[in-house]
Structures are given as C-alpha cells and as structure tokens.
Image (cartoon, rainbow, N blue to C red; front, side, top):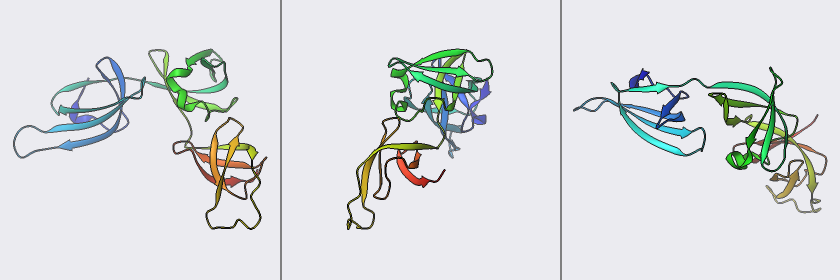
Length: 187
C-alpha cells in the first residue's frame, strides 16, 4: 500500500480488484481543504479508461506486474499463441481481448507480454515495426502532385497509406500507434 501522494505515471495499481496503469497524474493543492491527486487510469485487462480523484493521505495498492519477452508463434483465429523466451513455455491469449493488434503482430517476432498473477494482461508492441509490402498498385506516371499517396497491404494484411514510389516487395516502417507510414527501409 502506498499513499496516493506518492503515485507516479507508469505505476500499476489495483482499483476495484482490477489492474490499472497510471497514464496521467496531476497533484492538486487547493487553497481550502486537503490536497488530492487526479488520475487517468487504463485498465490493463479491458483497455477501459477510468478517471479517479484520490486524497493524498488515502492509501492505494500498488501491484507488481512482470514484463516477459515472448515470441509470437501464430494465431488460430481465437487465440494468439506465444512462447516465453526464458522458460520456452507456450501459452495463449484470447484474440478478442486484443483484436486491434491482429494486423500489427508478425509471426516469429518477439513482443513484451505483461503478466499479473501468472496470467497475461497486456501485449506491448514496439513503437515502430518494419513490414514487407505484399500488394501495391503501380503509381501512375505524371501523377506527381506533392503528397500523393496510395494504399498498400503488408504481409500481415495491414493496410497503410504510403507515397506513390512504394512498390511490392519494399519494406516500410510503420508507427504501431497511429498505423501510419514512417519511411521506406533499405535492408
């Protein structure tokens, strides 16, 4: 248990028996009354956002979560299958909990899986990932309006808006949060 005044961004707390990550923290010391902390929290199981106001002298429970480096093996449509890189133990995470990551994860790549009480509660992707372009329309000659773009499909099925010069077989760097093209990669 820690005092609410000691809460910092990035901590994981147990609130209403659920794990929440602190995404924003604001300390408020009004002229009258006691000081308090205004928090914005993200539920690590459901992704729901919660806003809480807690008096600084109140206690909250900080919980320990463990980040494990795990290799993404495959998806069978219902479950993402991972292997822990240290123990070589395999486990599954229901697809429905992380549906939005389906087109971002590549088989064989290593991702950070957040564990709490020996069960996975979150999958952390790198900020940027390199993808191979599998389908791309040809850019039309003379179509040189500055900033002209087209849609391509990557090896995972992710559709990304890219400049006209990108073609099939190119590797592109994509921001995993915004799902936007960053740059072409020469490897």
